[in-house]
Length: 163
Image 1: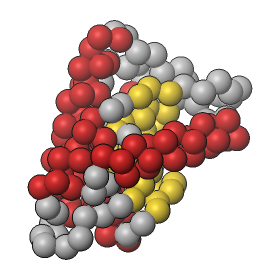
Image 2: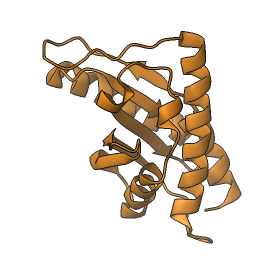
Image 3: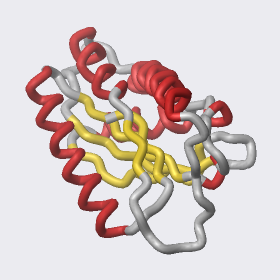
């Protein structure tokens, strides 16, 4: 991955959101115990995700990728990502593979300032872009995808990293 591509997708990952769409159900409530600490935790997790993405790609000298990858996962009893599922990807298969590997290797969820963190569903929204204009276009597309998915599915307690 060239330096420009690293510099452009790293800030894209660093933008995090917390989403809890309303729905009925038996899911336990996931409560943020401290909004300030949640912002700090998300920033740290996004930085870790950035590093894992750079390592996971491992391809040097290839064209920068242009892609959106959205990966949803839960945590196992040890706090590691499990049930990693690609919700959406556009662009190179290489981007999906890098995103999946990066998420599978992500740690630090036990530090999240949340109640019932093991019951939460997480989503990593990842943008790979060769330039700022493309990054902004892909971010807007990803936001539309998320709004539609959350509205249609009634999913609760999704903690969104990246994007």
